[in-house]
Length: 306
Image (tube, rainbow, N blue to C red; front, side, top):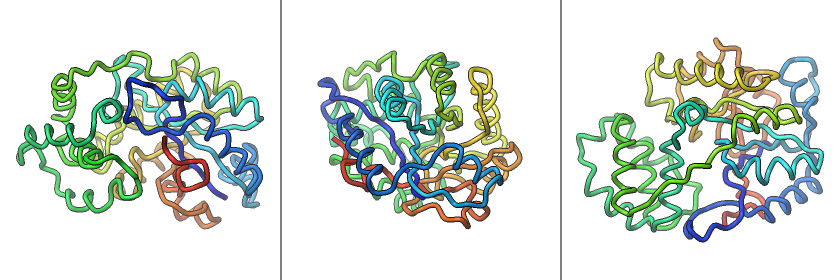
């Protein structure tokens, strides 16, 4: 059984000349490929396996989508519905309560609008050593963005903001970069609460992606608890969750810790996805229930970023 991870599935936007995304036409081609090569796991098979109602290991492909960007409702959801397919959509909830774009997505938009080399050259001059207190810096350097093919400077820019700098300093730094390059962020970036509910009522599973999409391993237990509890509380207030499911922001074993896994168990989360390029195996039901492997879509035909 293979779980596939998607983020941006959209059409070209001239104002984001450097943006990396999966073109809608290639998304459809990849679905055709998966259908012919593996088939798709039915939702009832998936839920039955993880709820313990069936010991039969499903065969086929599971589709997962992170971050609840508006393109998921505009493009992905209609395609899945037309094809009789379902997917799991992981939602960071803070934007629905703050009406602001998350830092991780502001970074994506900046790297889409401005060359990575220019961004990184500017940022490294304004970030000082005392802004980087985190002890796992070397671990993050070796484990982050290693499978991505980015333009020069993009991985360095993203790594410095997402992993290295103090979380409290990150928002102001991103705002400073945007002002330096005279970039204005869009206002219609996410799927609306109403449309998340529409998706939920029409066969899609909605899951938590925390509140703010932080690197959970950088947070203490209390901060992690807040991210999880408030996220699930909000999602359950706007749509029906048949069960609780979670997806680790950023992904990889460096991005979460034992506190995260213990909290997921405590909060009765049925399963959680990691980023880990291998098939889901029967042993994962117990051993890695909160770190299920997922392939990036770009590891398969038609999945390369445009």
